[in-house]
Amino acid sequence: MDLFWVGEAEEHFLNLFETVKQLVFDGLGRDDILEAVKDLPGVYAPGRSKTPVRRIVSGKPGPLTDPAFSCFISGTAAFRDTLLLEVNRGCPYGCRFCAAGFIYRPPRHARLDELKRIVELADPPKVGLVGTALTDWPDLLPFLKWLHEKKKKFSLSSMRADGITEELLTYLRERGIRTVTLALEGASERLRRMMSKKLDIRDFKNAVRLCARYGVNHLKLYLIAGWPGETDEDYTELAALLEEIVAIRSEEPGGRKKQFMRITIGVSSLVPKPFTPFQWAPMMGDAELNARMKQLTRMAKPFKGVTLQHDNPFQARLQGLLARGGEEVADFIQLAAEQGGWKKALKLWKGDPATILDRERARDEPFPWDVIDIGVNREHLWKEWQRAKAAKVSPGCSAKGCAQCAGCGLETPSNE
Image (cartoon, rainbow, N blue to C red; front, side, top):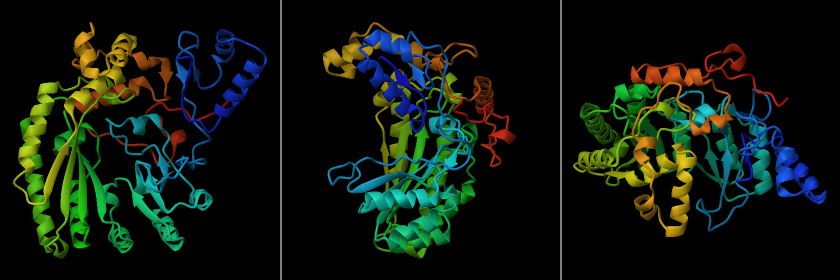
């Protein structure tokens, strides 16, 4: 790679392109151009830039002034005829496994008038709302009502259980929304504390109850398996919760209909991500992950109307290898390109995935991604990893803003 852009593109990014364009027109070659731009804000040119390169954050703390949206709308797109629209960026809850919650700090909400402007400009048949914490956005319901007035269909990404209210759910059902997605993440209360999920299981059960009561056709639940130190007892607790969820569904009038609420549990394997407290964590092995997925499949099978789907542990381990590996995986990627597949490349590769995936990293061990500074203090991430191992919950981002919070070491965003 000649260079990478580090951070958000709303500011400085076009300046980089204009600079490169002028250098090309001036007749400079590749090496001279890279030398000229290597230390511009947000530019990481491997082997040239001074590291670590600081992530660019657009604007000041406050509203998300330039929300992202899809650049085309098509009947052949993955989200058919839908304008994907960013409602919020980052997340205030600080779940330890979530890259978005740490990389995109401080968390920001889009402004209602700006989202309306984008929708009117694009004039799509449908709008898909994207964000890490949709129900935290105070203008969510007013915006949905505005979309309906404009005769726009809409869909929402997953919602927090404590954000599901009777008013919101009633409105969603009136507008024909048939599916609601909730993120449980951890099989047990201990695992949820480990990840600092901040989920009161009573809120989760109440959300299920409301979904059944108001006739939601399909409830999707997200779960992550493969946590460091997880045990069968954690999944025994999950089995009891699943039994209770099915009982709640049956208690509600909407749940007793002939076409009662279907429940789909989607399970993914934990991939410990860079720039999160779990960057020090080992990843669960392929055999253990496969055994856990089989256990979960057996657990869900006796319940009528409950389906369990899980990812491929091999693909998850591959993702981990690519996410956490450094220069040593370059040969592996090259082999995959030449041999036409990852599995074949893995057999031929002389490297050892176990050294990258299967061990807990030392406190001061350098990471390949240390060339980037996301703004969150490494010492803060380490402390959060120690709290994770002790299953202790930590506060999320302060509602008062970064200036009043020294928790993660994030400086007030600046483009100077």
